[in-house]
Image (cartoon, rainbow, N blue to C red; front, side, top):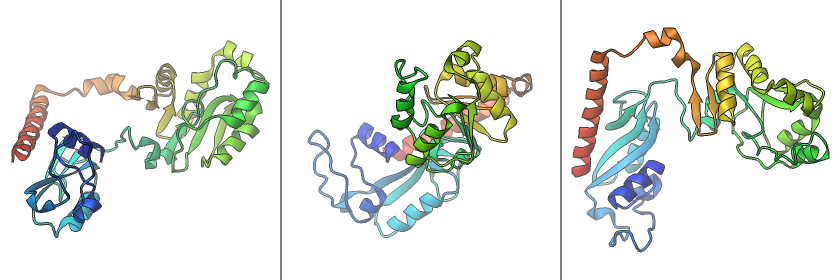
Length: 284
């Protein structure tokens, strides 16, 4: 619905969800939008059905089946596709080969079960400076921290700079908020003053991540995400941005595999062709 809403707003066109459209219903709009859309679909001659991403084409095939009874032209499209022209899809705006994750689904993607997650700033809010006193205020924060993201899948490993002595309240908070995980790794230092003096936040997380078989680390702060990626040599997603840090893109071996002018012209040609096809569809 997100790309459909953006297109409908930009072109001042009526909008519907798949099930509603199959039953002849449009979404209601305010008084500043176009008039005359009373729910009668008989006057429509061309509809665009768009998905955010298309991998196997299953969602598009399901949509085709639901709308097969409608007597109007329907173009089926996806913003992103694993292939330039998947089966049952008329138009893919951009090809993004796998493996891939997207900003709007990464925290619920199957990769969560092969990922390390930080806790503060990812699963819950960060403590304020007064709360981070390594004492009573911090204990209260650990028990009452406001949740931020709750992945639907089981997390492979939680890796946090919280001290080992706070394991019990941390586990209690995770249990209470339904966060599923296989392992919890915490920093084994005596107190927060020692942690600040050693400055081991990023190096600790990077070491655990590097030695694990996990494919992604989800971190809150961008500078620390860069440190973890640099020290581990593995990709890190910073929710500050958000931004994906991929250290492999900076390796000499990766740099040598540069895009040749011929490959660049071919890619630009494919993009131009898709844009022209999209314009023709829009004009008709």
